[in-house]
Image (cartoon, rainbow, N blue to C red; front, side):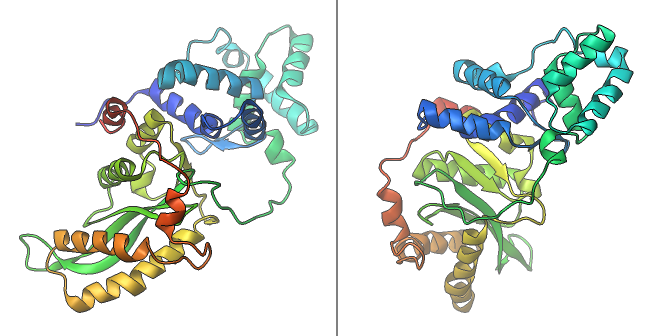
Amino acid sequence: MDKPHNRAEDIALFRFSVIAPATNPRLSPAERGLAVRDLAGCVHLDSEGMERVFARCTLDRWIHSYRASGLQGLMPTPRADTGALRRHPELFEEAAALRRELPARSSDAIAEILYRRHGVRVSARTIRSQLAARGLTRRSLMAEPSVLGRYEAPRPNARWIGDFLIGPWVPYPRVARSRRAKLILFVDDHSRLLVHGVWSFMETTRIAQLALKAAILRRGVPESLYLDRGSAFITGHLRRSAGVLGIHLIHSRPYRPQGRGKQERLNRFIRDRFIIEAEAAGINHLPELNDRFGAWCEQVCNTRVHAETNEAPIARFLAGGDPVFPDPQRLTEAFF
């Protein structure tokens, strides 16, 4: 049975998704400061698709709260000024006009102008969130064309890429017909190691969670997880698992699949070197397919010399040192 909907927890998970890059314990204070500055200059999409921008002081407060109390520390507390714009809706229209008039004008400056004109105190934080919900962020109004570059994670387990791959026809239990098997797999961006893969007949969040849990038990906890926006990857259950374990969950934007090239190349390699041979030999049932795939991963896929790195994926992964494994109690809570 699903847990009841918890609005406070949803907010906490969204806040963690914003600050996750800056919560990495490997960062020095200087590196964390740079990460927070970059995050303060970004537009973040909330669960409803609204663009949000947060001040650096807000991000610092959230990071401090998360370190002290985990997700509980990111849950919202009642605010004294939440009804100000509701009681005075004309103030928001004026705030929007002030931002359009001068896109570089900060929320603090807008709050001060409103107070001087009308004697009503509205926090800059409230103005910032309301303007972001309307798409009136400084970043969006002053946007410049983006420049795309090639990305590689700086070390093993810094980023995993997850995906589903449509595979061969496999006899379906208790039914005199076959169904397409689907592979969920996780790849380490730095080493190109195929961390873990599982064949199933469905693309569900539960399958994704079980595969992620197995991958973590094998290779440790990733710092971030890069996924597409498939239905199995965008549910609150997976976001909660990531939040409890401190994993930064990243979803690729629609029609902008940059950063997934490594995954696509691995998918082609699996089709050309494994699926074709498996179909030629014949597949009797799903457990057999999983057994053969697991052996192929360890003996072929992860031991070959990769064309880009000139190293075997397993060798490059192990060169990064011992991975970090989660506390068993926290792992159980993450996948409850």
